[in-house]
Amino acid sequence: MSTKPAKHRIRAWRWAVAVAYLFRVRLRKSLRDDVFVLVLAGACVGALSGCVAALMVYLSHAMQRVLFVLDAKEKLSSIANLPLERMLLVLTVGGLCVGATYWYRHRRGRHQPVVDPIEANALLGGRMSLTDSAYVTIQSLLSSGFGLSLGIEGGFTQAAGAIGSKFGQLLHRRRHDVRMLVGAGAAGGIAGAFGAPFAGAAYGFELIVGAYTVANLAPVVVAAVVGTITAHAMFGHSYRLPVETFELSNDAHALPAIALGVVCGLLSVVLMRGVTTTEHLFHQSGVRTALRPCIGGFLVGIIAMSVPHVLGSGHDAMTLMIHGSWPLITLVVVLIAKIVASALSLGSGFRGGLFSTSLFLGTVTGTIAGQIGENTGYFVATDADMMSLVGMASFGAAVIGAPMTMALLAIEVTGDFSVVGPVLLGVIAATLTVRQVFGYSFATWRFHLRGEAILSGGDIGWVRQTTARNLMRRDIAVAPATMRLSDFRERFPVGATKYVAAIDGEGAFVGLVDVASVHAETAAQNSAADELTLEHVVIQKESWIEAQTRFDRLMPLFESRETELLVVVDDKNTKRVLGLITEAFALRRYRQELEARQQEMFGSQP
Image (cartoon, rainbow, N blue to C red; front, side, top):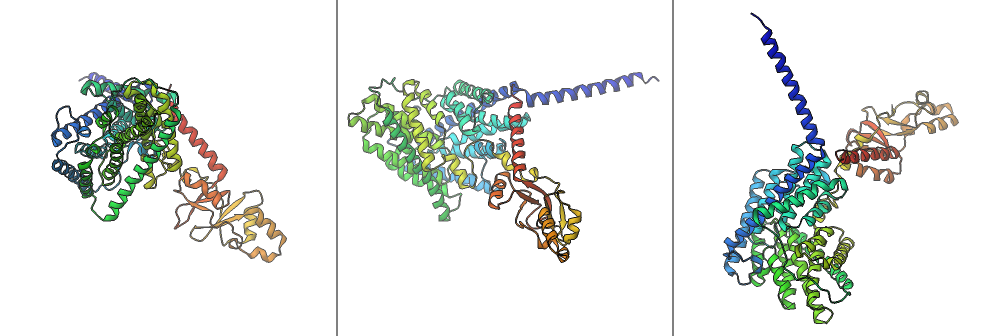
């Protein structure tokens, strides 16, 4: 019986396996390196993020209509005659629901804070958990749906960032590309929710990615545009402030805009301090985490019984303020009540964001400034409306820490470019005020409280992952501390090495020995000095560091210990010598690592 057909089949099978393997390798390389794949991934991430953002906004409004018995066209923050008992009940029950999510998470053994897009991009190369992000998203939806004094942005930016992160990981993209897709997700979410692609893209760059380059432009901008289109196509969703085109009566708006920006910056610090103070008070009270939202919801309900406009994100109340003639004292009361209600909402454990809240507070502050200017004859009516927009952008920039995002948002939600000058001045003044007085935006302030020195989404994780073990040289000379000086001179002649690490019988670091000094001293003394051991001449006994010491903590040690060389040991208990690191060598290796990261950043770009 002939075996040729069988051999042909085996040969054909082997060729098929080889072709399939080559195709898989090429496909994986293309998915990892091709710039067009990255842009396409950004478009997909933007579409999903815009859809998620618009869906969450729609669901939260639907929940509010059902829970507060609103008409189809009514929005929570614009209603002034809500039934008091229902309002108090809904907010308290909402606290119970959010508290139940904390209880469930605790039962599952998850106690660590959820990593958000900024922290993921700064420390973890953009890696986020879909499960943890879904948990935050549900909490944000419940908080907003039950009418708490928060926006829903924290939820959908968390979900959108996780979508981008998962796309990057599935495509096996480089660290930099994963971070870009996280930023693209956040950009698509903000753009979809507010119908503002420019503001969404700026948000992705300023807050999430932490840097802007031409090479990074495509995936983030595409995601913002696609997110806007998708959200509008699916839900007809847009965020607009219906205002008349401004015809400013005079050119003297620079100083009022700057002054308003400074005031918004100071008030934003009050808000951020209020949130952390409320959290501290709840923590000190000893109340269980799962019960804190219930108490917070009840207290917000008490405030809303007198000032119902503090409920919800406040978008429709902003429209009422701009087009209405609220008394000055009413505006001041609403401003104070909203700050307190928002601090209580976040401080007691509700989830959400201060994005919409800061826009509302800025609008109130700007309207107050506009009314004062109008009453004193400095402004006419259109100028007063303009100050409302300046306040909106300035307060948002101060809290969120994204000045260009807020400036672009003010333009996109009004469609009026005549406010560009005053808005930019107010935004800059507010941002500089917060930086000088406080030093952090709200997002980075919360990281600071946890001990993380994160100022933006810029990638500092690789610096922390670079340790003394990565940077050290292993060609360190060692000698037992019991070695006689005569033997030491024979083993290490002048010029052989500069320093020798002395170790004890168990291999632990004792100190450094200066070879040239030993030769000079023993040559000038009598022969009895030769019988001394290295223990008598060791120097810099504290010039050691653990192998896991991060680079950002390593460099200050050279100055604090007044040395140019540090011995690397395995840990502080055994202190076994592994290598050495000099200040000049560490800086040189750091530059090499930095260049490698930059090559990784731009290597996949055209």
